[in-house]
Length: 275
Image 1 (spheres, rainbow, N blue to C red):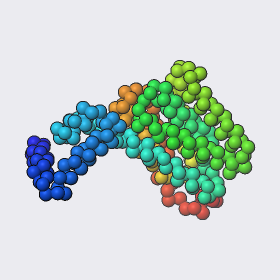
Image 2 (tube, rainbow, N blue to C red; image 1 turned 90 degrees about the vertical axis):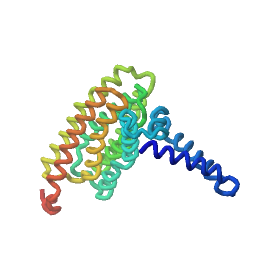
Image 3 (cartoon, rainbow, N blue to C red; image 1 turned 45 degrees about the horizontal axis):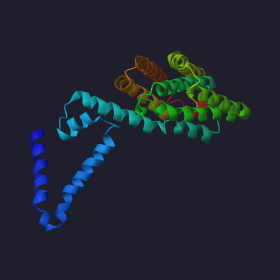
Image 4 (cartoon, one colour; image 1 turned 180 degrees about the horizontal axis):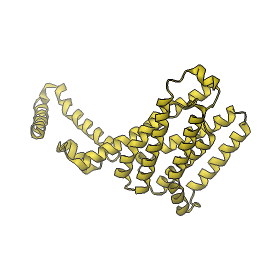
């Protein structure tokens, strides 16, 4: 099948050359070459190394497992990064629309922010590919926004502003050359207990209230799916067992919150208000 496809492409190329005297058909071959160059420029080295591009798109060896793993991992990674641009926007809009952050634990948000910051600074310090950690940057910005809204809508705007200054000051230090690598590694290692405690705090708040309040189901489902996919991409792209274990723990904890959202899904709004 691959051989036949290659022969067909070669015949098309020869045919285009033979029709050169006819006028417009001569443009087909240059356009095909331009398209091939553009495709290669798009995929190499962002999605595939050149050897894998040749294997998949020149030799048409679509069963080359190592190259397929790289393509799948890179594709998933960039899809997660793109999805992270909006993963917490439903949560932000829900809070702002209701003018209330009821049901959200600020302590849980702080611990989640700590975990996200640990992943981001550790990945930058180790020069990991952006596709393996890029969502942490956008999740950090959105989580900071949620943290500020929780304080602001709770009548503590000054405390919210202080939270912003303190966080971005600490982040600047962690990203600077002044921060020792041992501190960054320790922060990443603390991710697992931070993720577990933050999710348990949120789960406890949900259980105590008997509902999930302003917690967004879309955000929770996207976080759960993203953390599951990250287990594969972290193994494939970084080979770092600490990163893979962190996402495994994160998936389990996000699964608890997702299960609670499904469990409390049909609780009537009037019952929530009474409670």
